[in-house]
Length: 333
Image (cartoon, rainbow, N blue to C red; front, side, top):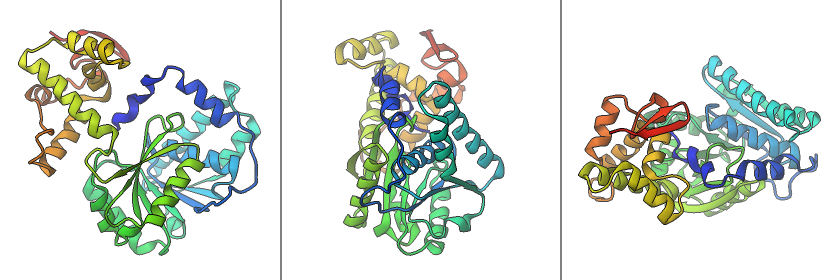
């Protein structure tokens, strides 16, 4: 449920530029200076997890950041699907001349796929990217905390859930951080690195260093709802929806105002549709429940109504706009 999936719209040249930086670099077997995480584990190979595994494997093959990447899914079907996603992504880079075949083989050779959780017991860093369900995440981290070696650091790729709650569930909160990647991981440079009041400073600095060594730009943030990007973005979307709900402005005029007046690549209602109105509702309802005294978190009635009617935006063909695939049509009257 990543709001960050639309961030790539902010820079039309971003994919080409970043591919040149990350894929056309010469590969080397020399280990990276100061590498702290020899063996990396990635849990969950969905939309975000497969990109994290591919990015880490690329850094492993190119700069020796890791000796290996252990990619874990509990379900063999999801494991195979994640493996296929990574292979297809690498194949596209080769077919476009962005990556040599030998380099592609080196990247793929760094990844070990498994449904055996014991394979994670001796990794140095685990990045988790499973479904955004706190109960599931807590159960996972409770198990990992009991099985992994004492030095293993845990990092959750959640976009909206409390890092602190997961850290406490792990039994080793001093070795727990958030690492919020942005979609598509292979292209987007930003990673929000999130600390709690329990996070050990050395562990946090090691993660910031790791983010840089895999080719990303890390920004630091405390464990606040939505971190930086979504904390600013989601309330903005809710205010835009509320403007329309009150009849203060039309859908078209709200979006046009933010495009031409604030220089945004798309308006907030277009963006909400693109993300998925169900995703927006899920996040803000969670914040309202967890932080009832924070008046910046509220749920517009029209948002709830649209989700109840399955008008979820781009994914269902109708939200604040009519959609045909990824092509936006006219506003819904």
